[in-house]
Length: 408
Image 1 (cartoon, rainbow, N blue to C red):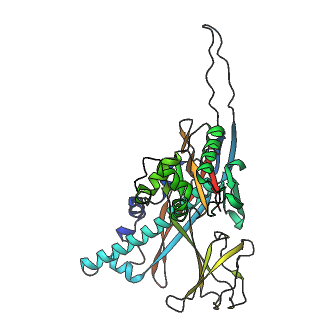
Image 2: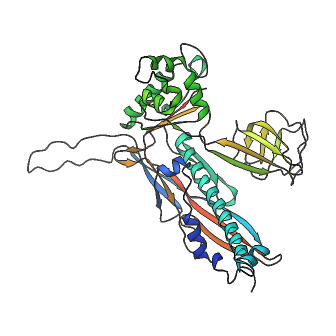
Image 3: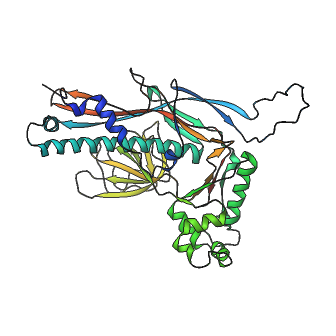
């Protein structure tokens, strides 16, 4: 008996039950907030609506009801994104799953399978979170389609809902014009007047929360408030959120990681355009870590200046001091889902419905929706690949219910 044949734990039904048992990490804030729906094809269409709160008119009894149009509604469409990944298990693992020896050996192999499946599931969940966060915070989403074509979606977020502060208005400067409280209330007014909804979430990370804690205007406001007893530093997210009228702040420090293998040599002190196998997920402003795979804990960090997806290069501001080898060393970018300089507010519902959903598209010969695990035997050396696939895109029904403040 070769490969995975005859191993109950590797049957597709069992594997997919295992994958579905893992809960999405509680830290996946945006993914957990909005529902998931299956769609009938990979060409996904959805309606977009900008705020309206009309009322049904009075009419005389016995008269004809007036007809209304679907005010403020447009239609958007896009092809679903597709992502997948696989993990290899060797011959020894397969033999241990067949329980040729002790029960402990079998349990060890099962734990290895569970850890591998959970890692694939977590990485798949993180991709969904990345997509949803980009849609909400940036109003755009880019991904690959057939033939390596890069596809971009613009979700129609009004430019007045994406504001960048400059000069003395920035939150990280000490000046009379730097007024976070005023900026937040201005943003709330924009959301309220455009979408006729009230923001009930405000999201930032710990670095920006620290900036707010140190602002004199915030501390002065507390002196005459019910929180002037030291609660600002004891429970800052609740206190500041209440002062700003957005409820407890969501302090969101979750990060994602992007890996690229070098396709060309990097010469220390000279090379700034770094060739990688896939540059699509790298972002300007992120930190690029060069890792020497031949040494333990040997790396160097540089700031990403620009990314060229077509050329497959990530350009850094300053060339690394060390040299790195093609097809051996790698680069890694780690970045927070919400940047250090962004304060993001939104209403999660409008007109009684969620403002966004994640649409799952069918894929494969069996028309699977959502995450699906399968396996492929390898003959020599004998082993097995465990693969996890997913397909879909997030959709935004109410683009005017959010407000992004880039504060410095």
